[in-house]
Every structure is written in C-alpha cells, then in structure tokens.
Length: 259
Image 1: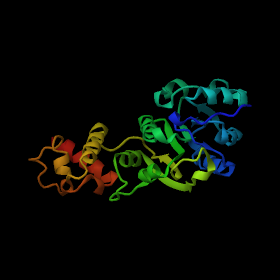
Image 2: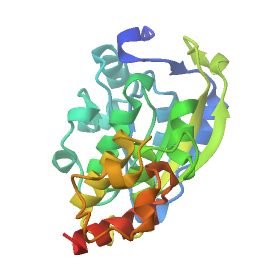
Image 3: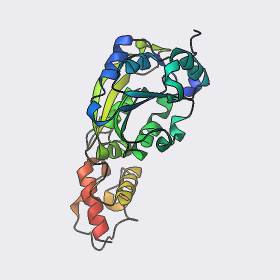
Image 4: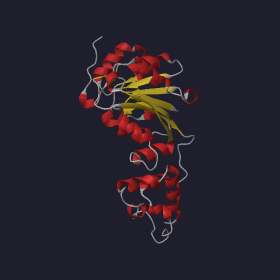
C-alpha cells in the first residue's frame, strides 16, 4: 500500500513509535463506562492497529484527509461506515453515536484548542479523552490556579473533567518531526457534566475575567456584576488566574443572586 504523505496545512505529524502508540491506547481507563471509541486523525493507523485489537470497543475513525481515508479503507475494510471522511470540528456526534463514548488521537497541533472546545460542547456524551498535544497545550490543560499557563481553556476543561498529564513525547518519534515537544493527557469526565450554578453565566464570567487578566475581577467583570450589592466581595479584588474552578462557581452563584 502506498504510504500517506503528511500534509503541513493539516498539521500532520505521524507517530512512528509503536510502543508509544500502545501506551496511548492503554491509557483509556473507563472501559466500564463506554464501548464506543472515536479516533481523530488516524493518519496511517498506528494507534488504530492497537485500538482495533481491543474487542471491548466499537472503534470509529474520522479523518479530514481523503488520502488517509482511502488508505485506511484498504487497511481496515471491516470498519465499513465506521470509517468517516469528514471534519471532526463539524461533526454531529448524535448522527453517529448514541450514549457515552471516548475520543482518542494524535491530534493536529494547529487545531488543538478547537478540538478541546468541541469536546466541551459534547461533554454530555464524551466521558473520556486521551490525546497527544503540543506540550505547551497539555501543560495549559493541566495547569493549577496561579500559574502563568492557567487560563480560559484550563478552567473550562477542569470544570467538567479531571485532567492528567501522562507523559512527554520527543520529536524524533514523528514523521516529519515537529519543532516542539509533545505530551499525552487524559481527560476523565466528572460524574456529572453539569455545574452547580448558571452555566451560561459561568462561561461569561470566566471569559470576561481572563480576557482582561491583568485587571482585578471587579474591573474585568464590571458589565456582569451589581457593584452596589457586591462591594464587600473580596474575591473581586483578585485576578482571574488566582481562582480555582470552585471559586469561579461560587462567584457565579453570588453574581447571579445579586443581580
């Protein structure tokens, strides 16, 4: 079979190390909570080879690259309609999957954040994610409050998922090698995909706080809070990066109660 060319405009860097591929697949840990697993951007199938061996999973693959899709059609004819030639970011999960599922992949680095926000949009269904990201993005996902990496994406992910930084991956195990280090993380969804507050307001508070992260929350959230009723709220004298997810939930409830 003709090999697939890695395409720069798709951010493709094909993993070549089978030991790392097996380690990524074995990092799926919630087998009792789902049977459906979707691999994003399988390329030539180095992860897929190990995934398909796991008979407890109903494996689907999605790749926007038609060359990869045609290659994988020949390699895995048994997948049939579970091999999908489409853009993951445009995917309607409900059209392909019913019930809980996991997502796995060596994700294209140029759309890492968009992939994670797509997961968040489908958090009711997606109970686990294991993926390879640029190391900097992986560190941002797993960051603690108060660190410079901590931001909007961190808070949103950690509001709904336990985020674990699993291991770092060197550039030499990819073709072509990226100019950055990579890392694998695991997201395991909380028991509930619902927050104990007005979720729409929570998202507004987090975004507004970090969009002006050098300002105190009292100033950054001026359009959302009732200043007269919240003059004594000391949390508002902090910057967004100092607040944990629980702090943001508590603040959202207070803003909602004092409108």
